[in-house]
Image 1: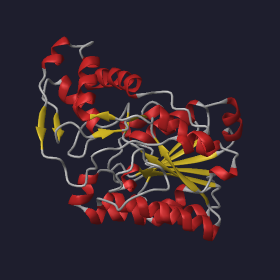
Image 2: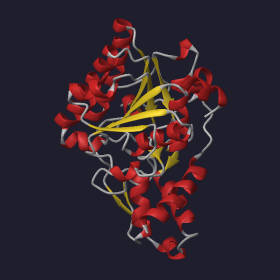
Image 3: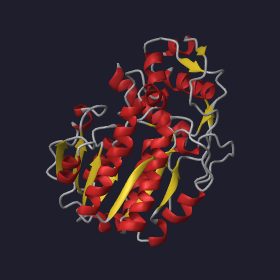
Length: 332
């Protein structure tokens, strides 16, 4: 956080929904390290209390255990709040295909509850987690914010609806909103467990256990993997910007390079062999591609650079080194 950003935010009260989750807990930690008042709202359906341990006793931290599907919980959490970082959601394309109703309830009804609570509490700015899944079946690369396709999953539909609701709440109620389309975020505290675990922590855990990582497809699918510190930077930039033209729109949050899944496994094996040489001998397995998965993802970050002064510090290699170091300490 720059000195100017700190000056702008030091007396603000920021609500982080989903603050016990992977991205949310990293945002809470960063704000509290800069002595900014933070309230976390989480129902611990996917978030973990362990993610709050390093800062739960901070004098400027408040935890509210509640559910964004409950409007009264949202209103309680928004009391005396200046800004909101809305991270609470049910992620995962496969999860949404298996259970579209719950995904819809959390990601659309819960999102609408938060917008209503923010409006009624006169919150000044609403920054929310959007998704690269919104690009759907668009084959254009790199992905540019104003060119999207048709959604390929219930999850993608919900995240697009978030953008539509945010736009309406700005135009109708004058609530300033910024949507951040995350591209395959990874880093410390990302959960490797469960059926819907993200690919990087899942592969790291498998390799540490000398189990074969399973790639969906032939390994040629590519993603714009984005290290968590870059995501934190974008959230802070959106919170602290004084450029009004930067508000009430959406941004890609990525590094701007793509890596195939085969390249990803190779990098992970290389970094993990620094801790255990035998990991280099672990084989990779392949199975059919998953429904709803897009083949390739690559973001243009020009808009974020121009309007929000975004300068990502971590590429895939430097980010993976940081992530692998953290996982080796915490998964052993």
